[in-house]
Image 1: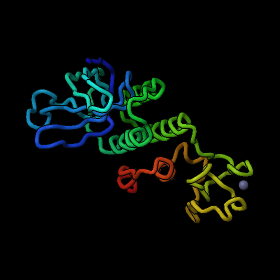
Image 2: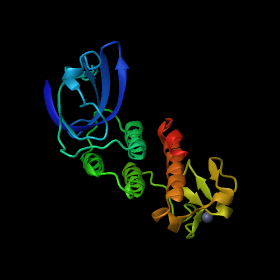
Image 3: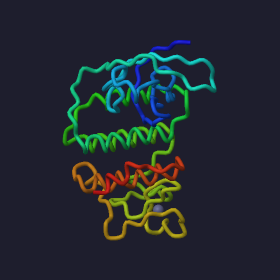
Length: 231
Ligand SMILES: [Zn+2]
């Protein structure tokens, strides 16, 4: 059967000498693996159209549930010109990884698709890091695992800093409640001042790394983007 959908790319891997298996997040089917036949051999067919950070219109076929579908056609839907920007790509790579690691195959989620469509179409600016944090928190909320930031998740007391972060449970923890917690990240002298998450790049990066550790624990998967953020 043939399908048409808007989609963006979550990841790619090489299959044999000629093919690529591309993991798309589609509006119609959610996360789906599709075989791009000849994508490695013939540059013509899919040239320049299998890059992350774009919204595409794709046509694909799928015969049965347990068989990988095939990518037939792919066209860029947005007319924005993407300039190569390393930092931008690292940040976006984290969000793609987040979705890839948590989503279940062929489970449509329009809310996530719309959120990502807006995020991908956004051009890189000073606000991208802040926006990335916002998107990550929004997505974790959608999954039902949003960590507590401004309050201790146990006793609910309001906190100005993140000094103890429980990655296996609810996030920010006060000193008293942090005792006897096993999966605790102690920030010691480098506590994150919560009000600074809004405007300080170094703090934003530190906070994003905390969200990555939290996401790694809850998805049970490693995030490669973490190593690039640790600059
Ligand atoms: Zn507490």
